[in-house]
Length: 440
Image 1 (cartoon, rainbow, N blue to C red):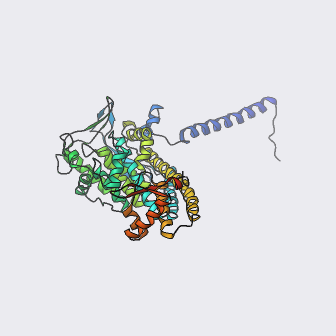
Image 2 (image 1 turned 135 degrees about the horizontal axis):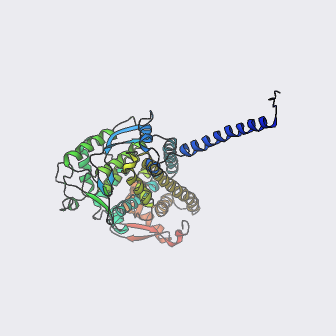
Image 3 (image 1 turned 45 degrees about the horizontal axis):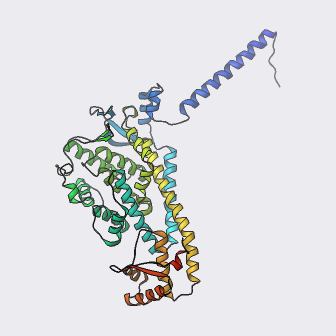
């Protein structure tokens, strides 16, 4: 071992102090670096910490990994849109975004796995139930009131309501009828399909342009103006065309692309009314096609449950100090989607356990095969979709037996107290008290 030769005590303290000075400097540098780079935060937060935001923005925007969208926004400052200032929406694909993308993909696989172990009848009924709830929630977000009875009377009995066309567009997802959007006419056609003509032709809602509105529109939260849509028919069309190009760009990860598309459609605000519901439907359609229908039809419900986070994230993008960065909006939207999926998984797993127990109990009754299957169908409907009616025609289709044979089996089950008839036109059945305890 080598030793430093020290001639006197003063030399010793000089060397010692020198070492402490170096160590102290290193520690200070480490602490400063840790404070600066430990967390990736909104540019606005750096602005209020008096950091060099312009320099940080340029680092982020010009990063090799940055996703640039060719979609431009103007910031909103104290309720006024600064149209002369333009920022391109951009995103850095941080590791946490990739983790969320993977989580949503894995959640979707889990949902598919659970539903594959349940009968098609139960899955179909569950989806119908969730579609009804999704429509109620997407309306609620926009302050449109729809009662549960109105929505489910439409789904069950084709009883027309103000939500008829919206319900039908969501039912198209169930039947895998997806609309490809390649141009402005496709957007307008889907919009017209979704909303009743009585709504579209109202004085304040009527679109004067060929595809989009012509006049200005603003969104308020109380007395505070929080959003201003793009002005001018030509300008709106130009931005919508840019959005359609972006939507069809296959070089961007699907979930990131879908979230940015959702934001920019709402930012443009191409129509006077229904933009929120229309935008969420397009998002639901995309999620249903790319992942699974359960993920698609739980979107509005999940946004409603996290409405403040969603709205704050949306408004954050449009602030001048954030220079068009959309990374954090995408992160929060992906978290909302994953949370919705996890609620669905929890629901299905609980129902599946009860379903398996119920199935065994019905088997123990030693009924004739058709009667056993009828009872299982009714139990599935009760368990997976409390708002969906069990119709006579649905049973004949699902069980592949004649209506005459079904009536005989039904009568036997009614006599035994297992089921009851609750409506004649159309014929609707429900579980009797004798069997209710199996699934309650």
